[in-house]
Image (tube, rainbow, N blue to C red; front, top):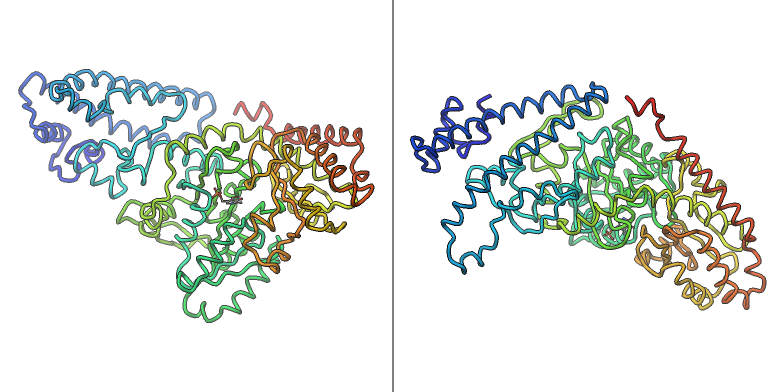
Length: 600
Ligand SMILES: Cc1ncc(COP(=O)(O)O)c(C=O)c1O
């Protein structure tokens, strides 16, 4: 009990007090307060209450962890509101303290120039800001700290209240990190932690830099974002950097992965004999066709060989795929990455990214270690300097600042509505275009597509990711004609290189996002010279199709008479839209819990 009370002491590391009264006496002496004065006595009584309150708070914490899951909804409601009210009581104490505190400040900082240079003292009016109904944007480089021993603890990662410096920690960014863990992990959120980065690429780089060492081997799925390909190929692989062997596997299944892994093991036998490791990098649903990999199966197969798996889950978002909610830990990737820049923020107003992994792989206070069990039930010890925080985040500086974190949080509020709408539009657009005999569509929303079964198996409500490709190789348009057609697709289809925005955007992967790939790699990735990647937005899909058809009449029909006759007739398109809209909403409704379950 004394050790818990001591947490609040300015001498928490050096105290020799044997009880709360001793802690109080030390505190007054530390700040040179005479305990015999009226003020000294009031301060002593108050400090004594606070030390005891800290003990009670810790007890409340223990009871909550032990009992909350077993409580029924009525008791959960009661406890939530009782604790919420406690927050207000504690804040009220702090707010009342601001008055004598402000007087003391005014008695010291008297001159106008001194006051201007210092600006308003942050503690005074920030207290009420914790009740802002949206997360507070903590736009600051640094923070007030309490005393030497507390800030010393903060530098060791043992004092979460003190955020030290915004490149390391920032309240708005931490709010987002906790939020994404809740969204991604649901009931398993307590086991996971996230660190935010200033772009999706910074998150990918951080996770890979954290794990991959000199002459290790990365086995990656084939269809990954061009920027990630470039990072692997141009940086990790470079002999003057880490000289990593970068290998790719085709296909989406466990079998395809296992064949590739066996081949990689055989070819890099020398590296493996030298103790080098294989790391598995996946993107699913993946660029540019929106295809899905059997992520749980591949994780299980990789883990059976003690390999670490990283997954870029950007395109699916926590709406479509929830890889960390699998009941079997073996089926979960070790590191999940999102580019927030895409659908999670949704409006293209910021660039940001995140890495999510189990607590013990993300943060342990300096000097400490944590022992857990591995998938085979054997004890495994993780040391503090093996966590992503100390190994990469703390030292590299690619942090996410408060304004951007706020932007992501704000955007994410509408993720579910936007994604449902986009999945419907994908189904309509892909099916309508696929009925045209001269347009080739690669999209797993088509039941005839090779990847449709995987979509049904892996993605939530069996919905397709809002990303797919079409190409015109069946007609063989020359490059000039194709380019003229593509350049007239605005304004229905935005000429923008991103994906996951509120408007539908198109690009030619061979010329942009995947231009880093050579001709053989492009072919292997299923990308043709006339491939157009469509990333669905929130518009009515019929308006997109109408523009597509009219542009084809304008540009393609003169060269290929009758081309536009292949498009779906208006009534058939209306019918397809109505049917897809109703079917998907029906699936959505059917998956909702019933009221009996909600009452529990
Ligand atoms: C699937 C995927 N992952 C990662 C990234 C990189 O994210 P950012 O642009 O935020 O660096 C992108 C960007 O297009 C992407 O499409």
